[in-house]
Image (cartoon, rainbow, N blue to C red):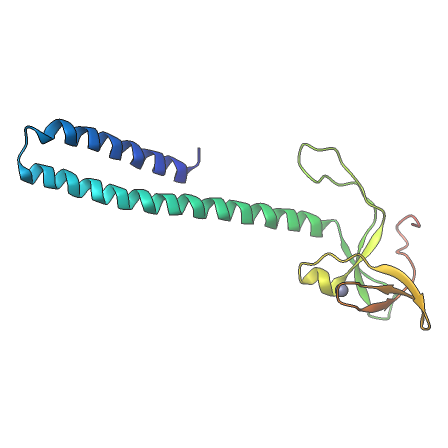
Length: 160
Ligand SMILES: [Zn+2]
């Protein structure tokens, strides 16, 4: 149980105990004591509401951290390369090295491929598609519509 859930549970427990105590005391105590217990109960309800909101916020942040870690692991598989040396045209390249999608799952691999540098920097993974037209053979990003020269496959990898 996380800290936020523990706080929610503790407040709920105290609130329930206070309610029982209030019933036991109600027949034998003055109005001042009953009012004081009622005031504490009201404050506990407020604290409980705040703790529930905090618990929800913690869960959302944990999910955000999980997604960021997943994105970072995804980005680590790619290397920024110059498609044609000296031309200043870049793309991210995955060389086919096996990787794990989840800690306890077996490693998998994908065929070597380029992804669009411009789109990847915006958080979009768009695999470049080889195409040919009147300007020759090109890579095409179907996400942003960009065409890049085909060039050579990076030397340190196996031909696709
Ligand atoms: Zn693109």
